[in-house]
Image (cartoon, rainbow, N blue to C red; front, top):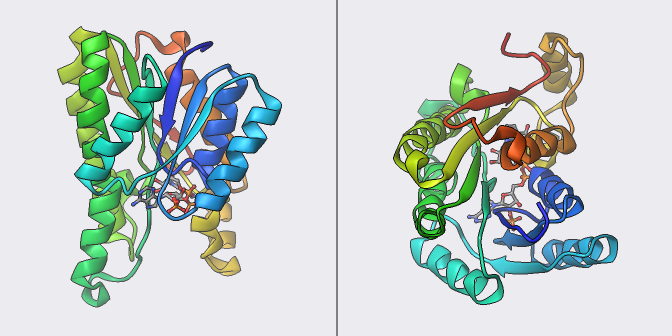
Length: 246
Ligand SMILES: NC(=O)c1ccc[n+]([C@@H]2O[C@H](COP(=O)([O-])OP(=O)(O)OC[C@H]3O[C@@H](n4cnc5c(N)ncnc54)[C@H](OP(=O)(O)O)[C@@H]3O)[C@@H](O)[C@H]2O)c1
């Protein structure tokens, strides 16, 4: 991955941070996108630059806003000759049973998780089609496959991401751009820190491998999907869930 450039949305913390570190270790230049976490993004930039000989750029952008993503693209294009990898990782939850869910909570989750993935895939995808090379990995969730009470907005957004992944894989296939998705199960991060100990214990009892995953477990699969080892793979969804969905 030497001299390749990867944009990681929501790359300053959690799973996105693990992806950024992992790709930098493989020699990739990294664009760390953040929306709120500017300090974390700058700290991670310093950390990566101290560890690896790669270029790192931090860019503020709300992926749910098309103009923000256009601006992100302009900034990245000025800095790097090619944009090779896009990892659509930014995502939020706003959990509640549907009867208690506010319309704004539904809209916000769809706008960031699904529309955000549309925005970046359209703008960065166009660049990749022109350069006749690119790999996109979308971070979905097993909840998008199995559903989850209290997460109808999130499940719908992540199921949408899978539909988007498969459709774009078909649209981009002849132009050298692969599009795949990773569906994590329950991974240790700020997102799962919100869950009570009881809920986590219950999930763990149902995970064949016995424990929550680590952000690095997801990052390793993303690395595979961006590497030449996966050149003949497109339109796939790989579950990283300790066997939860078996
Ligand atoms: N943790 C899990 O168990 C799990 C399981 C399945 C799937 N996932 C998915 O994995 C991805 C990462 O989750 P995580 O666990 O690492 O969560 P996290 O620690 O809460 O991090 C979420 C990331 O998304 C970014 N983000 C949120 N809204 C954004 C926006 N409008 N524009 C740009 N960035 C935005 C945040 O950036 P700022 O802080 O800068 O706003 C942050 O970097 C998400 O798509 C999530 O749905 C997680």
